[in-house]
Length: 141
Image (cartoon, rainbow, N blue to C red; front, side, top):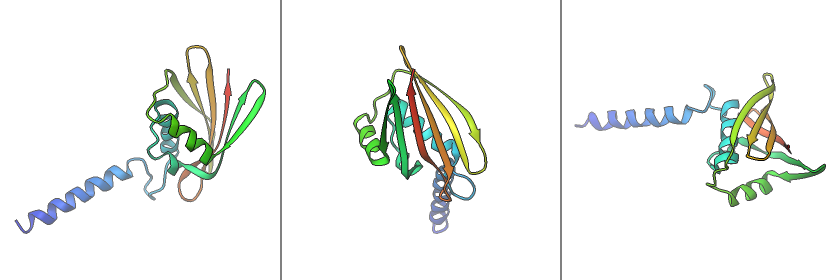
């Protein structure tokens, strides 16, 4: 019994460690895929878990509507998303990589609604603390 308890604790600790690393690289930093998946979950499903971690503090969010550009800070965007928390959008999402290299990537995230498409050009960068969203430019068609 004395040996069983420490062994069980070790097994549990290994399981938790494995689950935490599921969306991280071997170095323990956030991956490109995790950053984009977290963004899509927030925008489409209202799931905000981990979103704050994948958005760089200096990130800028811009929307172009009817030739009028509006920009938001990370805080303003997070405040808005908190008002739509757990609300699932009635749309389909398609993602495609526009450009990528070792330090930066642009991913197009199309949200197809019944009457329009919101195209989000999400720029993510390898910040040294993992891949983080640094810019999102959205247009409506």
